Image (cartoon, rainbow over all chains, first blue to last red; front, top):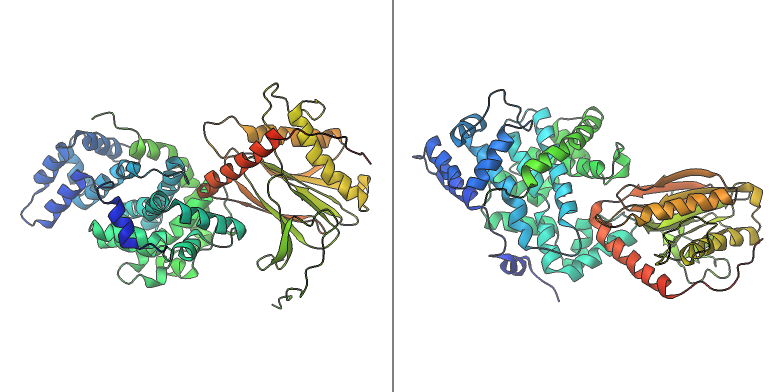
Length: 289
Length: 212
């Protein structure tokens, strides 16, 4: 029996919800009359997020010289758009905790996502993109469709994983999914991102991280997430050799304006050393309820 | 680049290895045998043997002069009585490991390999499931100990750490390609190995092994 993406999304609706604070901040961002104070007030309504936000703002993730001790200060230093991204990033793991599955441990899933997030942000900075934090969020979310598939269609997902294994890892997971499901995790994630009305750049990165040629609006950001995905795999299996992992589309390097030989070793090494601290910042269990 | 076309007919394997899945493999551009947990394969031909390892271990052994060689894929059963891994111990679990190693070596020797020419490589033994006792480490320790006891040098290895591996071995040349796999595959490989473990735990190793 063939399933459709709509069916899948219908099945997870209500289980996976966007963090309320993210939704509020976004509403305020769309309203020309709202002020920085309004956004700070919205943040303060969510004590758990406020604690996390201040933790991130005072960490080496930003490396600000001054102490950031209030939501107001955080908004003015980090910027309103970036705060919205942070609200999404810090809550995404708990948003998806209601979609457990037996095929991949959440720890492994978020490990890959966080490596990708760190790599995407770093690449964005290297090529001078101002809102590099958006790339962090894009990296964190790029595979969310996978969690939906693994939870709703474990049988087909298992078949896909076995196909990849049987091919001696020549077939990529998204290609195997297309064979067993008729669609892949990028499409499922994209549908979810559309449903949530996430910013277009996030939608694009989730949709096209495996087929960068299809990205029309944000080709450069998509290319960076595509590269970051591969560098994240390198960090996971502890290699500095691009030949050990899936192929990077050469067009991605061109779009990014970066040369593999200049950045791969640096980015992979740095994200490995930043991983533990960032994981604490974004994935530690809430201490405030 | 000229690709050599796949042969019209796959030549038969050595007697005893008919049950191993084997066929033309496009990406390896050669005939390849695919080992499942518990299997082993020996060949005289220039072909590949490949397998996916989680906490299991594979020994790749060949006669470096004649090119006769093969690979196994096994793990030590969990023994309730002891936690030993030394090849010289005669617990039920190490007997199983000895069995897997001796089968491979004996079949290489039986088909013309010379003991003094043998070269060994070992792979696998990853810790792919968190919060579990490190069975991979036990398998590595056993394989190293076994080879040392047999006087075989380990020419190369890629063992341990937290990822599964795809291993492709070409006995004729001794070349090995190890691809470390993403954690996405950990659970499914662990499940396959658990199923294998339950089959060997139920079946005690019996019978003597003929040594050459």
